[in-house]
Length: 238
Image 1: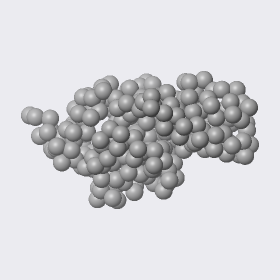
Image 2 (image 1 turned 180 degrees about the horizontal axis):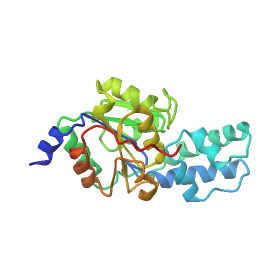
Image 3 (image 1 turned 90 degrees about the vertical axis):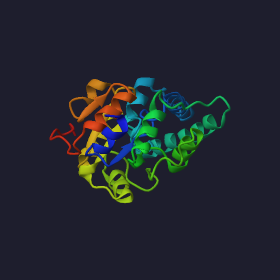
Image 4 (image 1 turned 180 degrees about the vertical axis):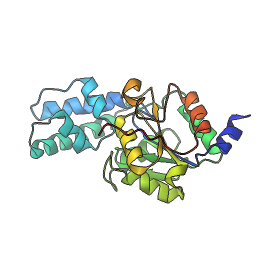
């Protein structure tokens, strides 16, 4: 059976992707912008692993995780500095936010099989559109859900709105992401969820709570093709 035929026979009718750490490798700019924002507000720079672990949350929530003892006013100051730093980095000619190898082929295979696609991300809408357009993917998704219009992960709102836009129900939908926050959002929305091993949370963190973890993008296609569309009974640890 061809991959296209297998996907068409799957119980999944709608696939929603996270962006940072799932579609694109944006860690370098995120880590650098966070370090700049901490320096500009007189704070000790966070280490890269700590920054990567909060990718996927809203900016304010991510900073609150990095500075749990700070007051909200300092969180807001760091967030403002981060936005300025990231915009500057993104405007540089050497700015890179590459697609992970094999992701374009996954998107093309799902599209060719008639599976509608969406994105649910902690990015701003402006940042998401810039990223997708940079890679020629702007027309591949039927819905783009961001924190500009929804509560951030792990709240289920982005995923629920994506399903409403696509005319899909939770039993037909799978969320694909690289963090525990993606898994928790999917569980809160009642959908299946696949973790990916190439992102910013370790595969062994995701494995106990996802329906499956894809080691590579081609493996992701195989997993989607065999899903029944009914999520497992496992709950995320939150």
